[in-house]
Length: 355
Image (cartoon, rainbow, N blue to C red; front, top):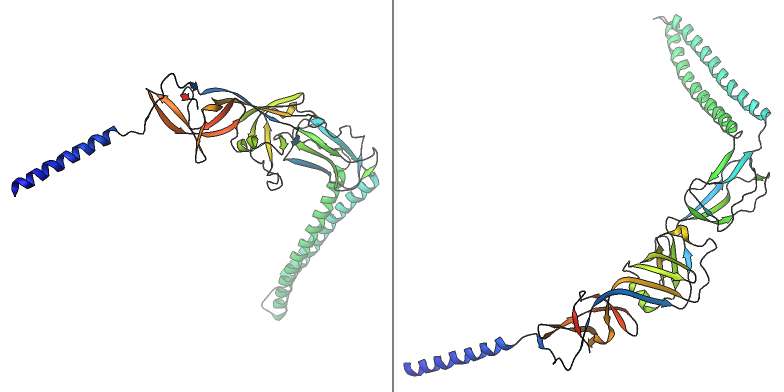
């Protein structure tokens, strides 16, 4: 019986050894095709062009509105800036004088002096009354009445002082504001920008208070908007890639951006935006008419399009290394008839087997 067990154990050991040997020969690596049957290509960095068969428009998310904020303002001279004019921060855009008279100024100065004089007279009167009551205060009934009158007069004086101070402050404010009208007031550009609108105003005419005189776009953030972009462009919209844009005769460097702050993302979900690096170079009359817009993506990882294989909707390539081929999933970006942009899964210089 022990001999049978020994034989059975030996057979079991042989089976286990055979299965382990078979497992050692399994590998995820696939033998590379013979050199005569395949070719390889190299993943390289280069420039890729995307072409949109339309032009675009400039978008300025930040806008400033400049108002005439004073009464009796008169436009000193005709406003020279126009829609599309480029301005620098600190530029004088409009100058106002005011319809004021010396007689009115004298009247306000007199009102202020009278308010101060009236307050001084009231203070003297109440001080005199309080002093007279102080002299009569005693333990006698009349003296106690004097003490109550003194307290009542002091409380009344406090209320009168509050009223007097209020009148003096109002008279002073009116006087200072009117004095300021004797000097010119200027509308100053708050930033580098492009004038977007100018009110139709005549020189030497009074302008109603709170009139919007000028609006301008800030050049701190300028975008080139491409409507109805290609699917390849939409795929890159969230990657913030550096790009050179050419539309008609105009070109600039920039970066592909998501929907800028200040723009309704719901209304613009089928547009992409290029943030312009040098907005001072944009045309003053708006985006040029163009039959197409070209985006040049620099330093993209490019691969021969025939190297891409698909398996259940997943793109992959076969990399040739040391006589074997390794399967590598890749994320493909924009492509043309020759090459495809590889966004993830490969490194520059890797050898890939053509399909």
